[in-house]
Length: 391
Image (cartoon, rainbow, N blue to C red; front, side, top):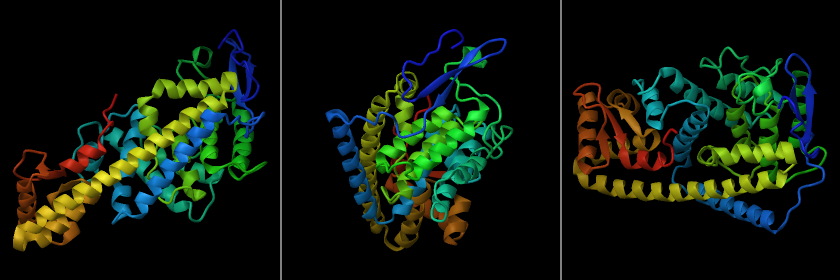
């Protein structure tokens, strides 16, 4: 970016040359919505309809789940792990669940703390949306939680940047992408906040969430945590505007498995003004992820019923076993002390009940120890971990 202006189209914004010992170009995004407007050709229209149908199916299945909060609990944690893996953490879902059981994870604790912060930020945002609209204030509040403690804690959590940042390089002069200079950050964010609130014009929620994500990533308003915050904005916008009733729609797995394509689509917006190409990629992801979530929910309901029926055959011990099974639906991984605490049962009772569930074949002891044993709900964990291998 040091010698030639990389921009070919002013539609998405402009590249401004920054002078100094090593000149470079910063990208300053134009306010949304795009001008000229998005061109909805047959392909984009078909993808929009496909994504809408998938969202409707997911919402319908969610509303008919026996206990949507159970799936929500684990899905939020799955998203936290995936979104953090994109940023370089090595934590797995099992590591996070062990950490929440006060057990030692298999990776550095700092990685798991970062993922745990994401869970807290996501849950905080969902709760806060009931009393505060999506705004720069809310974004800063959520960001402060995201970077609390972990590796980004020294990078001004909850504060918009006052220095230049860049992506993929050792300095702005050799970076793959350089966001706006510091004095352009607040004006760009102010325009983005107005767009979220339907100024200057109303935008369909599904399209709005996709445009906002791309614009936020181009502004890159924080020193760290921009990717995680930008990915959170997609479900937050959909929840705030009633497009989905429960936050089971997360795109991190889609972005992770198509990382190169994702970055290329964002960059084509900046260099070529290709908003249509970005939206096609994004809408295809919405449809894929929503259908995956629907299929996962249906599969989990099936195994829960199957295992409940098996527990019914345990005779007198089935009462406690069913309660432990309900606890497993929420946590996937359980330690003996947690079972005792949550259910108010003695250690021998908890130990005996978990042994019964082991005999039924769907619970596994994962430490190999005689004391301080930890158990996992294997079929449930296996389904949730699909596609989550850290790469």
